[in-house]
Amino acid sequence: MDKWSELLLGLILVIVPIVIAFYSQSWGAWDFWSAAWNFFKGGLFWVVVMVGVLFILLGISDLKG
Image 1 (tube, rainbow, N blue to C red):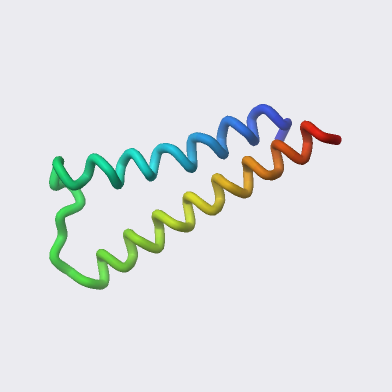
Image 2: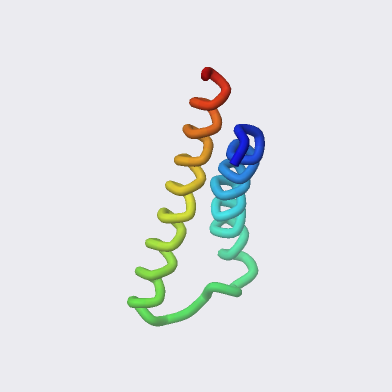
């Protein structure tokens, strides 16, 4: 991937889960009662955010090089 697409994908993967997590409280779309499901959602959120941070770091690294 080129540096700009890595940065763009990274920003999308960081911002979108945060926005979804913020607005899901009022929508009730993620309002499930299972503790296992809540654990899975939390884990999925952090995995997506960390992949986004990885893409941002790769994009910054490509900008420097």
